[in-house]
Length: 478
Image 1 (spheres, rainbow, N blue to C red):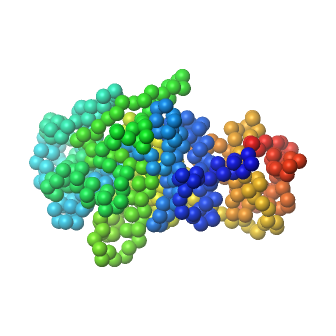
Image 2: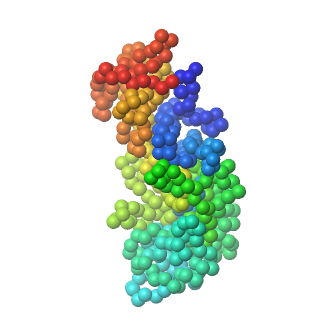
Image 3: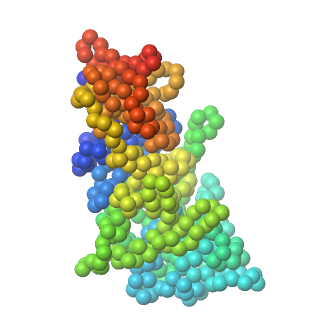
């Protein structure tokens, strides 16, 4: 029974069950779950949540750690986090909705819509600051407000009145159109312009125009602090040298909400990503108006500005990244106590969101989830296994007590996959075992060649208790 419990522990909990995915995806998710669990435990991250979607549905989500400071409320896939700069994606959609309506022009000076948004003149030759420049972070606008947004403990974000007053008091950082400079002020101005031409306040514009139509009921342009410690995770400081943390004070992004003020869940962000995947797949405009036209989203995700010194490329609000395994589109968010990422892959039709309440950057984690899904989908042995074994007998965690913290072994495409944990880059360190006889496997090299034998041993009751490789033993946890 203990071994059955161990095997079940590596699967999603019933409370968070999702529609059953295909067998390959199920095996990949089981490995992702084991990897994420070890990452959270060994990294001592207070809360950690992951969600995965494919094509038109959420296929899996799970949380690790705890939501509250007392560590009594488990994190889930629908735990609410501050999503910080992922807010900019919703602002970009709001801008393009007004562009579709003919109320905004991307290459018009932003002062056409916001007369107060002009910098202090400095005599430098520059093109005007435009919405295209603001959405691609190429407008040369200062990064943050002079209030010192991110300074603890108060996190003094500006009011709209302060933002309007300070714009004319500062010089532009760079001439527009020449240099990449990530800017929360720039994204805020874009959101302000969309709200101004719509004749509505920003919060109601994005709520009624984007969040409600897409069914994103757990995404808000504010922090629902009445839910803190129950549905919303508390934000924590980085680890101190003595291993302790402190709960960070709450912050209100105020005027900077279009750039950094939203909250959401991993599940909701994946739904947002799946909407994009579905819209991109359409070849003609839908009969019923959607939040955006397919052509508009394609234009947003087309590379519009390349930042060569920093190796980054931007669409309209979206970060674009070419990688060996495919093309990532999305955004991440970092603010006091929270780090979050949403990445979609139009080629594989997967959307993945990862969130944490640690200072751990989760962009790489999100990529690794995509890569682990790829690894199972593309895996094959050079020749079929000569025997079929009860692979679940071998599933679990194994320890040597010396070389690594633990190794997880799980079923994988008719054989086994092994991975030492924790590992920040698991997709590059997977190892495969091909069954050749009862309790005997052959290690597979990176090029698919068959190598030495690996043996498993059982106790008197018939339970697998050890892995033997090169005469060295790893004990299976009970």
